[in-house]
Amino acid sequence: MAILVTGGAGYIGSHTVAELKEHGEEVVVVDNLTTGHRGAVLDTPFYAMDLRDSEQMIAVLKKHNVDAVVHFAAYSLVGESVKSPLKYYENNVAATAKLLSAMVEAGVSRIVFSSTAAVYGEPERMPIEESAKKEPTNPYGETKLAIEKMLDWCYQAYGLKSIRLRYFNAAGAHATLPIGEDHRPESHLIPLVLQVALGQREAVSVFGDDYPTPDGTCIRDYVHVSDLASAHRLAVLRLRSREGGAESFNLGNAQGFSVNEVIEVARKVTGHPIPAVKVARRAGDPAALVASSQQAREMLGWQPKYTDLSSMVASAWTWHQAHPNGYEDVDSPVRS
Ligand SMILES: NC(=O)c1ccc[n+]([C@@H]2O[C@H](COP(=O)([O-])OP(=O)(O)OC[C@H]3O[C@@H](n4cnc5c(N)ncnc54)[C@H](O)[C@@H]3O)[C@@H](O)[C@H]2O)c1
Ligand SMILES: O=c1ccn([C@@H]2O[C@H](COP(=O)(O)OP(=O)(O)O[C@H]3O[C@H](CO)[C@@H](O)[C@H](O)[C@H]3O)[C@@H](O)[C@H]2O)c(=O)[nH]1
Image (cartoon, rainbow, N blue to C red):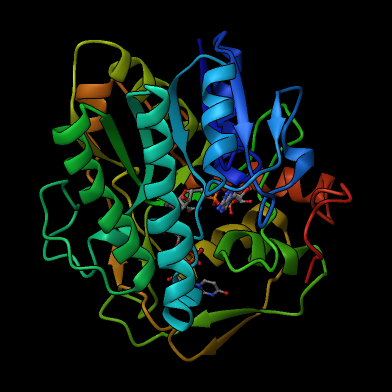
């Protein structure tokens, strides 16, 4: 029995592969390396292929006797999705439909899906509970919500059980293994801030300071990537038990930090002044997103270990200092 991880060469996927293997699971990775890195896949069977290659996908599912899929592979940038929505519908919704068809064909009936805080849009109440209204403010969130609904119907039609993990903002890096965050081009706040501290950028841009928040900058709930990884393992265990059918859980720390606060924490962690420049808002950004993860704690038994923002930033800083140019494998996208 094996777990197939799509997008296992990416940031959160590679940490989840590590977590699953640490707990004795057999893992196989499928990734087309559009945004992932061959160097992030450590001693694990790896297929450099696209989700949409149905024939090959069915063969891999059967060959490795896969009993559950953990599905990370997607495009996931809010700003880009506003500019290129069809790219997101094709690679997220259409490609996931192909993956699910392959699973049905191969008789695999469990999937853990990477959903997102972006399904909620502008929340009415904070912290956000799973039952909150879902009105995404960007195409990225819309594609993830569409997939959640597709999974509901697939449970009814084929008995395909799913757990949708709605992560808030992933941060940090593995405590011991040489894996961390390396998106190209980088667009996430924490790695960009740390690139300034490394002397690779002159300043970080603050996207908007006129939001309805105490300091005017956007608030997000940061969650350590290794804590996200542990939730995926617990979700697979739940799907293998008699529990569940089609369920969704938020993953966050119920604590929000503004963009300015994140930069301030990074200044303390790195000892660098990290200049910040105010620029216009980025389209598609909700003002504030903070999670209630009570259900994940109660129903999955999830207990995040690295909940303090300084330690998340410090673990990312350790990775960035050790890998100032990110992964150095030849298959990685060009860095900019
Ligand atoms: N990073 C975050 O803060 C965050 C928060 C919420 C949800 N998510 C979701 O988590 C998942 C992983 O995010 P990440 O930050 O690790 O992203 P990532 O870009 O590092 O990883 C995605 C991986 O999927 C692969 N991939 C993409 N399309 C593919 C395809 N068609 N076939 C095969 N492989 C493909 C990429 O090469 C990459 O390795 C995504 O689904 C994202 O939407 C991320
Ligand atoms: O140079 C930058 C980059 C980001 N931000 C702001 O920082 C916050 C965090 O941005 P970013 O790190 O890009 O993450 P998000 O856009 O919040 O999205 C992440 O978190 C979402 C869940 O909340 C996931 O769904 C997405 O996949 C993931 O990229 C946002 O308010 C941005 O406007 C800046 O001010 N300057």
